[in-house]
Length: 222
Ligand SMILES: *[C@@H]1O[C@H](CO)[C@@H](O)[C@H](O)[C@H]1NC(C)=O
Image (cartoon, rainbow, N blue to C red; front, side, top):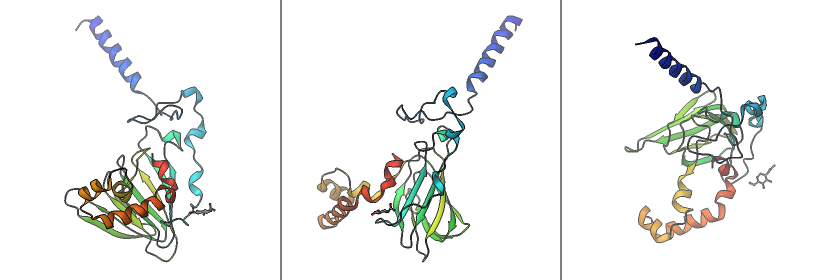
């Protein structure tokens, strides 16, 4: 290889490695979010406050239907997370509180129980095997990406947990809403769920009455 060829090759390698170096990509929330997250705010506009979030120390309001509250630190609320594949949630559950069967299409989840006890489980995708455990203070459990899972406070005292995700925007789909609070004609819901009219009708009533307004945190997952 001539000296010229070597120099040209070297300059390509140098420019490629230079292009790959990016310390962070703080979300520019004024532009829409794409599959890879938000586009980056100009580095000159980034401050330390983009990397600090103070909203997770406050207990949520657990007086709603599900007796549980989810306080989120996703890219929408915590722009410094954008592009880093992580996020965090503060979960409060009153006795009897439940996060109904749901999935996060965008990320795996790990829960860490700080106080009380939480019964939790997930269902594998093709075998439908249930992995179920009552978690006590200090316990952690994993919910793999995309699998249906739930959390339930079956204890007598309020439960507190922190949850982290392998995505800055893990997304949320609640099974009951997907089945019964959608815009499908009820004949189609019945045909695709094998439930009869009475079962569908009562579930639809339930969901239209309580729906998203009972889960005010839903919009944070959008
Ligand atoms: C808690 O939520 C309930 C509705 O679920 C509402 O009536 C009440 O005002 C809320 N309390 C606070 C302190 O926000």
